[in-house]
Image (cartoon, rainbow, N blue to C red; front, side, top):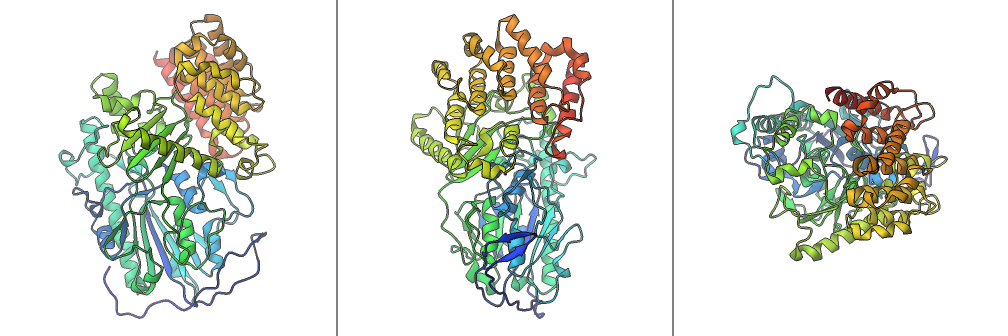
Amino acid sequence: MRKKISKLGQVPCVLTCFASLLIGGNLLTPLQDVVAAESPNILWISSEDHGPEMGCYGDKLAVTPNVDALAKRGLMFKLAWSCAPVCAPARTAIITGMYPPSIGGQHMRSMVQLPKYVQFYPLYLQRAGYYTTNNSKQDYNVFKENQGWDASSRNAHYGNRPDGKPFFAIFNNTVSHESKIRVRPHTAITDPAKVRVPAYHPDNKETRQDWAQYYDIVTRADTIAGKHLAELDDAGLTDSTIVFYFGDHGSGMARGKRWTYNSGLSVPVIVYFPEKWKHLAPKEYITGGKSDRMVNFVDLAPTVLSLAGTKPPAHMQGHAFAGIHQQAAPKYMFGFRGRMDERNDFIRTVTDGRYHYIRNYNPHFIYGQYVAYNFVTPSTAAWKRDFDKGNLTEPQKQFWGLKPTEELYDLQNDPDEVNNLVGSTTASKKLKELRKALNNWCLEIRDVGFLPEGEIHSRSVGTTPYEMGHDDKLYPLERIMAAANWATHKDVDELPDVKKYIDDDDSAVRYWVAVGILNRGAPAVAVSDKELKTLMSDASPYAQIAASYAVAKYSKNSALVQTAVATLLELAPWTPQQDVFVSIMALNAIDKLDGLFSPHLSKIKAMPINGGRSPNGRYNGYVKGILAKTIADLERR
């Protein structure tokens, strides 16, 4: 950004503290402090689907001169996470300042209600006198009638603010989105021969072309960021505006986007504070500096409120890293994965900055579950092709195998995260530390992800998932977590412990019993006929599905297998009497069981793709997608 001599286009704004304020029909507790008569303008520039593959982060192949120049004038956070490795949950963390697993918004393209007292952060900025604009994407996993935007559209712009208003403006840039990696034809700029292929990816033509194209679209995102910075400068606002630049999660390449590895969670975060507002900057701020503080997307909302002179509300779970209310850096940083489009999953993760611990609560699923939108990318399909041909190295094969219960990586010595340290005696102390930190975090935020997705909604009738999650009668978290932790370890020696859980009166505990047998595979299924029969007739359809999947996949008892097949066929159709979440889970099991359902192809073809129960239309396309994939696979057999 170049200096301007022109007069700043900023008029002082006088703010007043109110005892209470009625907004959108809700009486809100006052959060605003008495602040100075003038407030900073705040500009956020975000780009989709790209990690820290930028020159300022040391990537020599990247061509990102505009963001690099911003970093030289500002501060760069060396390790920042998006919380979620996919857009809608990550954006939900930003807009609420809360971890989506605590509010039920962790699943891709879900939609849940928030308590009345929880507002999106732009609403608090409006109370502080700001003109708030969003250009233009929203795509949150939670619903609020009043989102707090003065303008949210492709035309939203801080230049339209009334006189006397400071502004908060976001520009969301989509040119680096995953979908742009696969656009053909593409005029190549980056030489595919020069890209570094990560150890987990096969070194083939498709992989190199997609990585090269990824670098090209990141350069395009940088160009657009440069235009926003030049526009700010031309308006004479550079010296009165705090600027943030960040990506919304890791690269759109497979095992980046959607995955809780550092490649999916790590994003660039750069902040610039003009001289006028340096007293609000992070304590470690120096021009051109690099901060060791770990920054997470839940930190953005409390930070921007702190910059505006407003104390972040108590329900926000992040830590303000700038402003008058900035807080000490947390010791750990957390992330998560829930359902990804049509595929159920459940992963939680934590890092201390060097070591990265991943907890897989669905280790009975492979890493590379078929997500239709991802498999359109040429390198993803080529990766699966090379696996089927037996052409991959061990690190490259891992993506197509079952997940371990736990993973631990040394980010310093193994940045590609291919050497799992679980089982290493030298890493045992760190494993215990991070395992405990993650467990404590799940309890602290009251993570509702230990429920099957449909039960998040059914238990929240008359309230919200967040409030339900804090009611131990509705959600006995410690009991359910104990069952989940038992279920997802693979020791067959621990199988007798099933007796502690199978008669529990909570349906989620019994669901985890079924997962526990499934996860332990054929040896556990072979000695669990009685338990599986019980679970296949459980009151919980989710327990029925997990038990039926275990039997159909591993059992040698033909009569029991027939019962399992019949149960899945009964639960799969999305009828007016059937919940969409039950249908999605049952269809996922059927799809994974391949030829076992070939005799039932006509019945599967007749299953409806709409018309059943659903809390929101965003869920409804997934039934159609899984059915299409299942039918196509069965027809090819």
